[in-house]
Picture 1 (cartoon, helix red, strand yellow):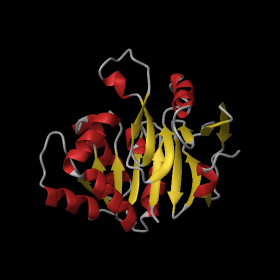
Picture 2 (cartoon, one colour):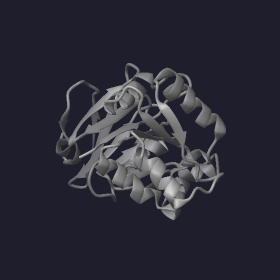
Picture 3 (tube, one colour):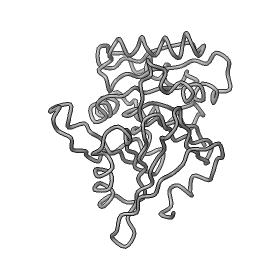
Picture 4 (tube, helix red, strand yellow):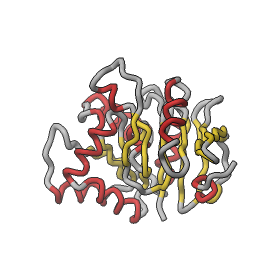
Length: 248
């Protein structure tokens, strides 16, 4: 069993998700945990790395490390040491498709699965939320054409047997995109609003939020018809199988 907090969106630097970030740190059970930031999806953007240092380091008391795979070429031993030596891992947002391709090249995908089994807290926002699941609803095409608002299904790490889609309160095309993708995708899709997160702990789940009036959607097909149910955030945990099953 393991721990995942997948955040639908929000500005880390503006403290939009701060209560969720605090929960990520709390899940480690340590006062000053070792936090690893992986900014692959943003091409190792230095400003993003600095923001993570300020929020998770200065404000939340973590010991910060960064794994850069775009602008640097760390050895396999260094990558393994950083990932498996962490207490929590936070994956930043950006181009999910490119990020996963780079991870596969370095074997990061397999190491992150090992980190989950080891009990290291896995977390992230947008691309950093999608990656932990079997499938993701991604807007990666817009990185080649900013006017392109189509979404595609991508294969994630498969740690959780769900399809995840972020940014549902901010980007209107997400709802329709997820419904379209789920028509040919087995199982259940989860649409997360910005400032809402799916927290999974040892086979149980709940939705948490850092702002009012945000939540999530559970999307699946039954008798060839789409079912879209709103899911409220709350304090109680429920068996993850309840979320994975095609029920109300």
